[in-house]
Length: 113
Length: 111
Image 1 (cartoon, one colour):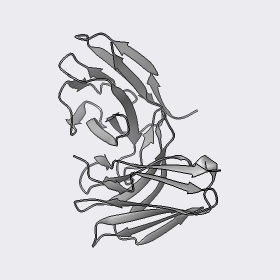
Image 2: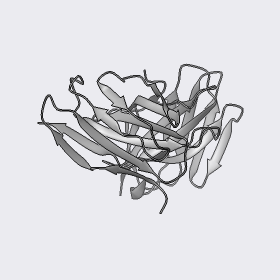
Image 3: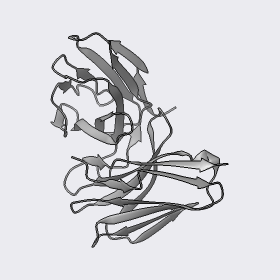
């Protein structure tokens, strides 16, 4: 089946630790995105990548890092510099030039304990 | 920054009634899209309307776009209990692939 897979679904992190969220897609999409969603809120863009080996900061990139070494993978690292990391994280992908219709994964819920 | 703001924030209607939600945005856009999110899940794309279009239909969905007012509306006709979800508008700008989401409308259909 084609789609986007995020793992794990639930993640717990101790304060001061870095943690990496996985996002893999087999849709052959060039563009990939990471969003953060807080309870009852909309989505805020953390990072996006339009092509392999290139990515841009979104609106709330501080405390996060990404890499795009392969077309199908766009992992997000939540660093200890992110002061309030507890949230629902969503990964998406799209085909550039199609109006940016996005396909989403099922999300990872990160909780700092 | 949030490009889109949905209105109302929450809406409860009886099954079978029509549901209308609105979205306002701030800058010029390439297109506007509507997505649906069931609780705790990812978003699903519903419909896309381009900046040179005024109205679009897809099944029970009707979307309008008024670029002069920088606003859009999503109408769901003959609502069903399964339509209970949060609905988000998202805007795509010219020149990049950045997709910016609004704050969402939480729709509850009462059986």
